[in-house]
Image 1 (cartoon, one colour):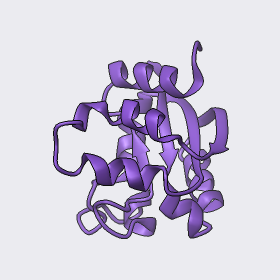
Image 2 (cartoon, one colour):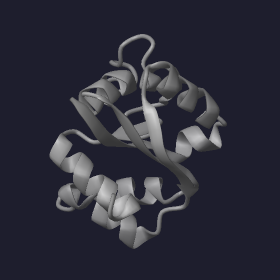
Image 3 (cartoon, rainbow, N blue to C red):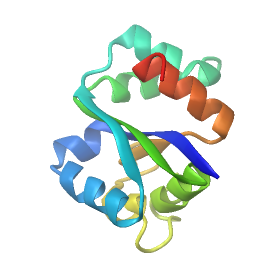
Image 4 (cartoon, rainbow, N blue to C red):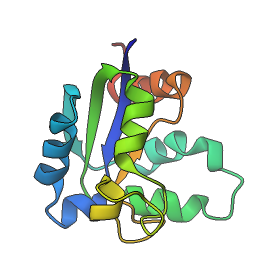
Length: 135
């Protein structure tokens, strides 16, 4: 089933000049990029985005990191896009990520892991709405 999911290329990967390499991997893996924007997230937007983690001790670090520099926001489309994007990203911890995954290649650690992806179709719809408004 064709789905759409959110992808973020986080500030660490953008600062390291890996945006083009990551976009190439995305396209080579059969994703269609429906939307792409570059910008710096405002603190309030980041707090809304990470709301699910609001009560966790690392919430402040998440917000600080994601607002620390430019990021790339992508609307990605493909059969089973959520699952396929998560597979291409790799495990959250780059040390545990599969060879050939984005996080294995470009992630530094569990916090600076290059990319984000929605974890469910329901969250993909919410996250796409948060970043792009009505689709």
